[in-house]
Length: 109
Ligand SMILES: [Mg+2]
Figure (tube, protein in one colour):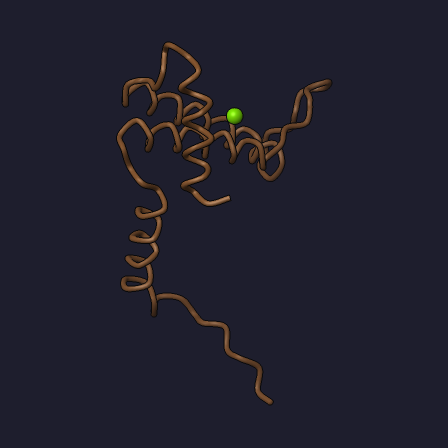
């Protein structure tokens, strides 16, 4: 699924409801909530905060997907094309950080 398809899916979902997209500040708060939920799961799995007894297992993949959903909402509400933005961002990384990290060397034959 491309980011364009993801944004379409998000739009089909949201446009069923009269409330529609939230205002940017509400969306930012929602995104922050979801990042917090991801942080909670990461802390349970890899950090120092064990789950309480009987607390259900979380799902990191679904927490990341929750974040993607809100990012899709945010982008749609502001008419941002995430495919285009992602490509621009990757180009920035290639230009800026192309020599920053140690490249994996091809195996010698
Ligand atoms: Mg979540």
